[in-house]
Length: 183
Image (cartoon, rainbow, N blue to C red; front, side):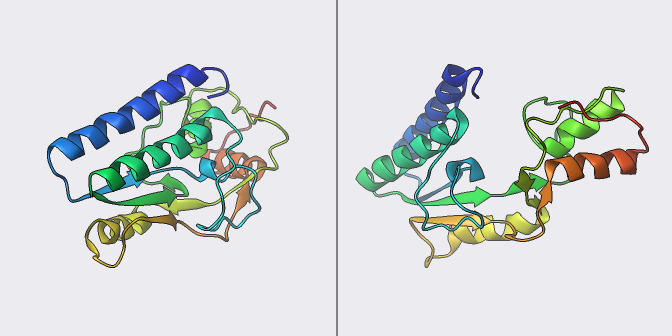
């Protein structure tokens, strides 16, 4: 997102505006928006829903702008909403050939192509991962539970984090590669 901020902001914000406008036109009762942990930016971990967003890149900033647009328009048009903030979601059928999303898929794809995985920075950034099966029920609940409205809800663990360096090493070990990461 730091290389093409216009594309990121245009796609995210206009996409969300389109969905909200269609929701208004079709008189949707409740909208569930999937935001991103990038909204928290340089806040201290563990992230809490009460924290003010402090994004550090255009992607995180675009997610915060989308949330603001949803609050404003849903409020004006009496549409209930909830904002889900999933941790890095993994599971079967995820796209492995996308070079921009999901650090696990990116590393696996690089290794399977015989290329060294790339680690940005020193690799000591930490991430928690959530299996897709662990967020389906909370999303359904956010969609239908009458007691859950106008909330930001984090979906994922606060513990069990791993550094990107250790994650790439673990993936390499599982795939049996001797390729070393490029930093």
